[in-house]
Amino acid sequence: MKVLFVCTNNVNRSQMAEAFFGRLSTHQVVSAGVRVSERGWDGRTMKEIANDPSIRQYLRFTLDIMANEGFDLSGNVSKQLTAEMADDADRIIALCPKENLPDYILHSDKAVFESIRFPTPMTYDSFIQVKDEVKQFVEKLVREIG
Image (cartoon, rainbow, N blue to C red; front, side):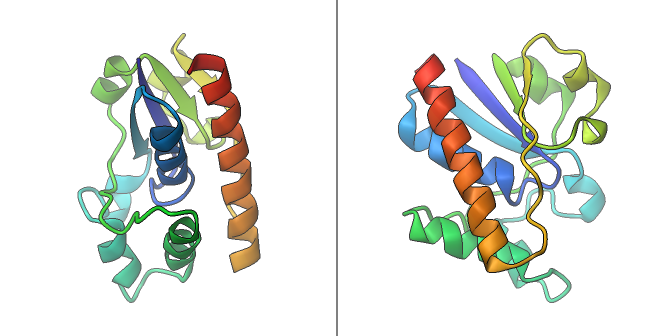
């Protein structure tokens, strides 16, 4: 089975979910974002994006928090969601609000919608809370599908 985690920018929730799922499950996993290309992040590593002076501190929070969980996400590449990625997946897990999603996700019988809020306010503690929500959701998912 191939699982696709989707969020808005593919630099926070979906990257976290991909890391946790990859550790806990034997299924294939990939993540992507619906607005990666419009931000100019497609194909850039998390570290490259985090080191960009125009980027807020929040991406550094994600890298630090996940490092504390034993994951080095700095080399992960941010990927733009495509219809082909959705077609290739056996299960699509949307972690962002439905209004951010394209129709081919909204109308897919493979999609599961688990909106996990973007960390606000943008503090370290709110990012830890989101990481905990993502981790709990992924643990539950792995219990269900292996």
